[in-house]
Length: 263
Image (cartoon, rainbow, N blue to C red; front, side):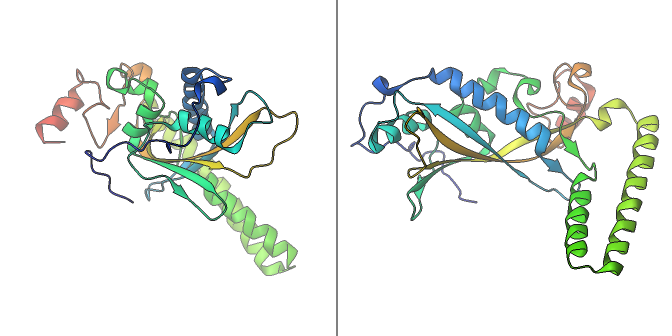
């Protein structure tokens, strides 16, 4: 990962681009709120976290309205740059096809880009929850993919082996879920994740229809497992987390215990 000095200047748009203000066909703040909200929902429903520390990428497409389908390449780029302005200190990269990628490193850059008042908000409004943690769904997907390949190759012994493994997995998941839910507190099964990295990709040569007055951005977000706990039972904070500052209720006993040992 690229290390970014906190004193590096924010990346700014190329000077030759036109003024984007007359080209806006959307409200900037509303669009950023929409991205923040939709990304949380996408991560919540798609990302899979494991005890091994897996950091999944979640991808989504965002539509950016423009005034007409006949805008120039520089006008389109000016609109995109307006959305991304002062979002990162990492240089914007461009590949051979002309695709531009803005990289936002860490949750703070991500929150700042989307104009989220993260310093004055509780975790319940910032981080992603509940998320899928050790559900076995990822392992099941991998086995199902292997099963389809074995079936196509007509490898009957391999088909039988994988089908048995799938059956064992489903049985294990069923028993584990019923046992853990009866023995462990509810908060143990409510999981959270945090943002580690965000890539915003704009393809200059994306197809445009005559009646299509919008641009498409691809947003890829990498997240990691943060902790657990039902927010309604913890004043909007986590119940258990490896860090205390900003994540745990400052009035909770666990917060003071972790602070006392320098966590």
